[in-house]
Length: 138
Ligand SMILES: CC(C)(COP(=O)(O)OP(=O)(O)OC[C@H]1O[C@@H](n2cnc3c(N)ncnc32)[C@H](O)[C@@H]1OP(=O)(O)O)[C@@H](O)C(=O)NCCC(=O)NCCS
Image (cartoon, rainbow, N blue to C red; front, side, top):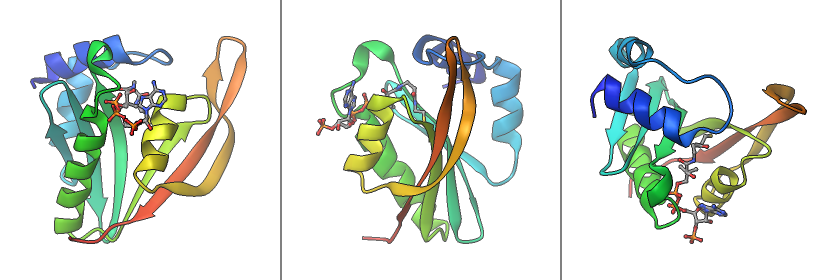
């Protein structure tokens, strides 16, 4: 997917927050430790620093959600991160993002921290949960 495709999909998929521009995706992907896993209908962007992997964004086309693409992308990302030397995978997710929380829980992520009122919402705030899981090459 091109930066323009990524920005368009991001705008379609995320209900909250600001839409990212194609230029922002281009700049993010140009940063050295950052990498992308492209799937047929979604993508994951993350980075590996030393032995830690951090997921920055996971997005699946709204009309294709719920049929396993997110799970496949996540497994592919984790394998790539482990190959790059990561022993643990971290991410941050809003406490009110039920589909994402269910995906991460099913994949073995557990809560490692909480940032209260981290995300703005039209009617207040939502906490950010920091989740992590150990990685190992199969
Ligand atoms: C989060 C997201 C990537 C999940 O992708 P997906 O392709 O729909 O996920 P999958 O179909 O692989 O589902 C994997 C598991 O997640 C859970 N899940 C996915 N969608 C769900 C939903 N709408 N409600 C409840 N659980 C859900 C289920 O546990 C599912 O396992 P199961 O199929 O065995 O029941 C997708 O909903 C998305 O792009 N959301 C918008 C962007 C976003 O919020 N990203 C995460 C930011 S941290």
